[in-house]
Length: 169
Image (tube, rainbow, N blue to C red):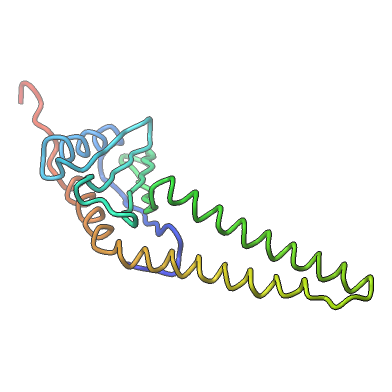
C-alpha cells in the first residue's frame, strides 16, 4: 500500500445509505472491535485515528468523506499524518521552494552586475532539501504501513457489519 504519493487515497462503494454507513462506523468504533480508536463524525466527514497508547510521530489517520450515490454511498478515503505533522511538511516544502526562488533571483542579480553568480548554489541546495523532505515522507509512510493497513481493514470490517436490528423486527 505504500506508494510514492503523499497522502494515499482510495474509494469504497457502500451498498447502504450514508446514515447507515455512519451508524455502522459508530457501532464498530464505539462499541465493537474498533473500540479505543478515536473516531469523530462531523457532517459527512469521518476521522479515525490510532489509539494514543500506540501513537507514534509517523502514525496515520484515516479521513473519510461519505457522499450519497444512487441507493448507496461513495466513501472517499484519505490517509494522512496528523495535521501538525502535515503542516510541518508543507512548511518545509515552502521553505525549500522559497530557497530555490531566492537562489535564482540572487544568482541572476549577481550575473547582471557582473559578479560571480554564487547565489545559484542556493538552487541545488534547496532541491536537495526538497528531496530530503520527500524522502522523509516516504520513510514515514513505510513506518506507518502496518497502521495504515489496520485502519483500512477496520473500515472494511465496519462497513461489512450487518445492520442494527430495529425495534419490532
